[in-house]
Image (cartoon, rainbow, N blue to C red; front, side, top):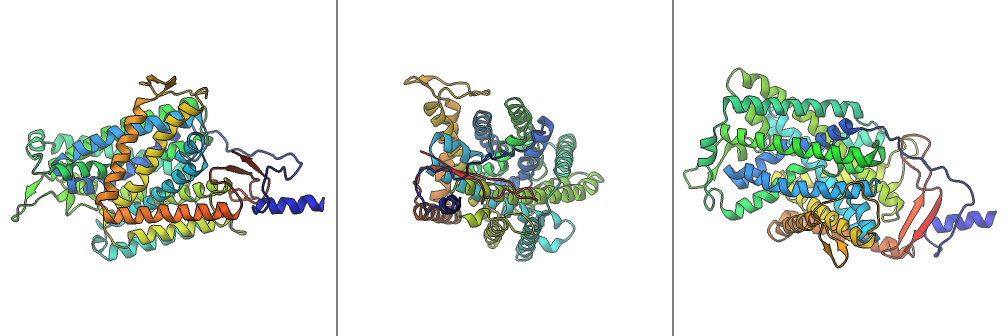
Length: 513
């Protein structure tokens, strides 16, 4: 009995190789309650994806100018293709983890880590960019927050507060998040409707686009890549699949509604915005728009301010207050998402135990929360929204590319896998149905990733540095614990007594090749 206990301790810390059953006892499998239907999945997904227009429109217009709606539309094509890929993979493998989970089944454990580590960069930058955007919208009430370094100091303090709340265990209420997401959706619909009636000018929109000059082709192409920031949060619904009721039905419907809502609203807001703040030429010959200058940090508030009186006096503070709230929720969701994914990766022994260590008192993954919040705060320090966006695009495009490749690989490796939702346009090649939507989507997201790597120094060095540090950590941890780099080792764990976090120190190790 004592000998078995000693063996149990040794295998958990990785000092005994081989397949070993540690404890001969029945383990209770605790699962999340499947209670979320389409409205809850859609509203939560929209709360994350929909909030991104509050910062993405300005930085997209910075490069694409009057062609910003076209850049958003082009990026929207890859958004749709990526959502389709996530839908097939999520309902085929209904477990949290998103791209990391897909890669495990399609490409193996090493690529699962790469996808998961890239996703954690995206989550981390979501914290950065959402918190940074809060300062822009609050500047409607406190003008000092529109200037550097006041906006950076405020953002770092806000991230610190969210970090403290998540360490202590104070979490946002799901119901409250849904309520604010619905309010946000309604407000954006009203803003588009009112703007279409009062300031929409189709001839003006057409006249201010002169490809090759305003914008240049290079800037327009880069504007498309920047527009990808507008689709932050695609993984949200996928990561909630274990809580979804009848995921084979609710997940595709939720993603379908998300596609329609996002494309319609983002397109509507962008054309109204460029009608209100058209492109003009400066004395030095440079073309610009107030969306990319005065209102680059709070573009939707700028649209509200340009409405005719008294509508502007109603909408501007309303948009500023609601945007600040929904962005705050998105930043907190980023903290929860990255800490949850970090915990999941720890359960597959992809990260050292400290990343999934649970605080004895608060029962929260405190190290993961602190670690990623510190990184998020560091990314904000330059105070440049474009640089922050570049880092997000690096992580997100790598994540999406691996998701597309993983779906194709799963078609090859496990063709008999039950797929309640199956991508169409899948010609049979060498006896395997290859989804062309995943091929096109993967090529597109990979091209955008390469664009960031070769043309954006801040995004390149932060992104590559993050990936290299992660890979080094993974290889060292795996080798020091005598685990193969592509070996899947799952720790079957018991949940902790309170706080909702699982304990990674109980159960058995299950090893597969």
